Length: 446
Image (cartoon, rainbow, N blue to C red; front, top):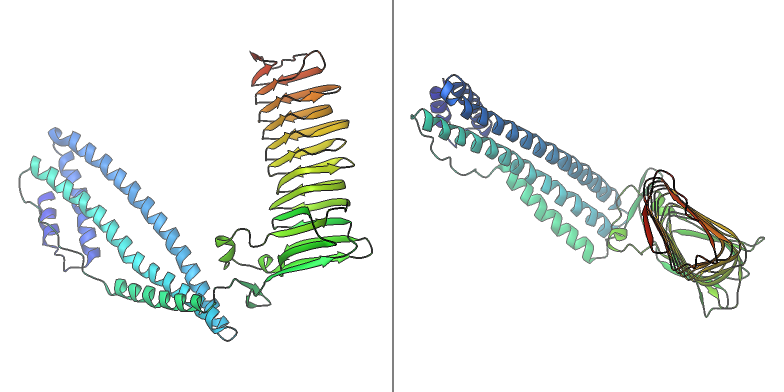
């Protein structure tokens, strides 16, 4: 049966259908395995061949799955871009042509990828079949397989190449004419994002409230009124009665369904820059952000921020408690406040050269690190779940308590005669005043 299958396999020429050839290869591999298993001497070879076959099957299935996911993504992107391009042509010829070109090019890539992927899978099966026939011929010297010819050019491959060329041409033409604009979905159709950068001044503002997914910088500058530089699709308005400047989300991005190219090329496109007069002391900076917040050289009565944003405060003086609740990283550099209460759900917190000398401070980090350097506290309690706590060259007027469930605790550069320190860790190391101790489930060092 194996000899007959080998002959039948060799009779399938390169001009026959590829499906027939692949089926013949698979059948040949199976019959050779059965033939080798029928002879006690060749059983080890058969077992090895079976293991190789299993490996090939796993590899082929993995490749098929990966290619399928990629091709599905390409199809969705292609038809979405084609639909967008066609519907945008009446509104803007070049933008419509730009997205139409993207859709055709991606569709062409999909059309080219299908025969290439199929050819690759057929090649893996054929190579396995050839190796099986070689092994069989060494054990049972009979028919030798001959080399297969090259893969003929398929119509599908030619069509794909043509689509890529046409799509690339339309894409380039639309791009050269300024058609590379973001689009978003609104009121049952695609809309072109014609946002532009604007600079606007707001008089009589003493507070800033954030509800934004965009990066925000608040700093001092040589301006007479609060000045904001932003992209026009971001909603910014002033509550005149309360003298509050409100910074909200980018409306166009909120309605976006993925056809945005500029944010990928320029991640700072949506940056909001707020410049505060040098002599102005703000009453409050508060709100929620999910990107990043940077406050630089500012005097504020109260700061209360929460969300997923990375928070960076540099040379900021806060009159009342500094309150932070973030899942991003927090950096406090040269910050002064009565005390700080920070809850870190995911990000790390780094405090350097800062002062919190009026009230007790609390820093809680669920799964992240706490790093304090060169700072002064009235009293501090630092708690971490799985992260490390590192305190270097810092002063505490009353006492400091540090605890970590699974992380290490390092305290150095602190005068043990001037402070009451309590530190405990359930599953980490303690290093206090340069003395390292591997602790038991509960240890306290005073």
